[in-house]
Image 1 (cartoon, rainbow, N blue to C red):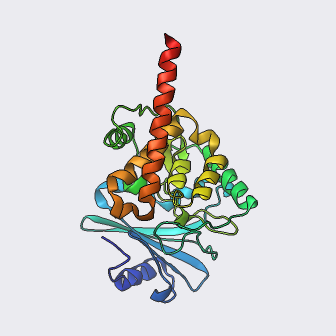
Image 2: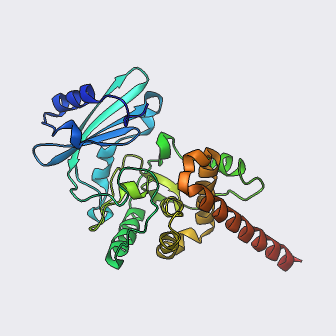
Image 3: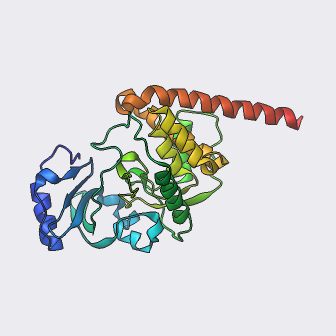
Length: 283
């Protein structure tokens, strides 16, 4: 399923009736692969998402963000409805309208430096600190699948056999922390339905890998989230993010393909040197 290419008129009509709202024209819809969002005439936002029905029990939806503090910069959630159609679970949810654009518009890979001001980075870092204080038993579901030690190990070992994949620390993550979900200039964080517990540094590693086509931006992410990324589990998260893109292939990675391979080589070399030094020190 790809909601960027298939007709959605019937889907939007269903959401209007279920939520009791009037949507703006379909031309104003923001489409992604498995979601479509449209502003309403009462100044809110309706977002419709598709999820495999088999994983529905593992995902509580955007209403779970009601428990998040305002400092996490998430849009307020108002109401939602879901229905099952064959193997697909549909969710239509009305949230606060965030009028400012996302940093990376139209999807794809960010290839130009957005020149974000220092206050923007401070707000982003503050949101991540606030998120880390949230108490939840939810597991993060990147790409609709719950994260686990087994998933981390299998993904990394398929590309980097022999490397340590132990997840020593878990923390609450947004779990879809990409430039298409971050707005500027005010800095708001969108699309929270996947949030939950993940290896510490998951969000930072995701954002870093999505920045590698702009070296200065990738370096800025490393600086802002140094504590998370330089922790043992943070390194595992970086390996996972790199391995996932490498396994997807160059056609999928696009402009990220070359910098991802270079970053992977550098990180694996660093880890090998650390291992050699540790082994020498133990003798």
